[in-house]
Image (cartoon, rainbow, N blue to C red; front, side):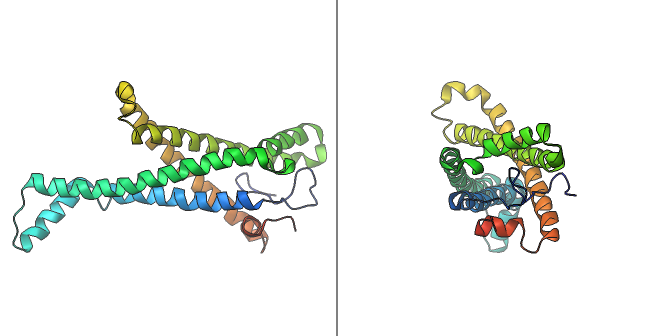
Length: 224
């Protein structure tokens, strides 16, 4: 029996078959993984290595050892500039994430009928309520798809709040909500981190059962 977080390979409509994943969907999946990872790494770097105060102290000490004297304001300015350069990279990752999200939404309209996300979720719900023999499989698929649906919602919120912060000058009349938007953006990041951990754990559990499992399907397309 699969754990609740473990993706399954079987097709709900045809349990004897393995799910198929289109080339565009697989491309989106791996590019999305790279972009989200890169975005999270920039946050981690600025929250640790390039945190303004420790970085300013580090710079001041090193400049002093080299025989140069910098004021606190000067070292803080340099530290902040380093942090800003990393945030600039974060913004570009954000643009890439928005682009991939739009691509995924458009792709949903052009996917084969049995590969559309909404349809597979509906099929799982229908199978759970009507076909007793597939109830366990359908329940599991429904839970996994619901988690994925929440992930898509989080990506949309991240994209919208991120664009607001990136173009805050354009949204100057709404500057009073900037802090709240930033808080929501950061909160969603932590939830996405949680999703990534759950997703990786589920994939690991699935791979233990099958030498050619879900990762192979997401690379080669499945359906074998």
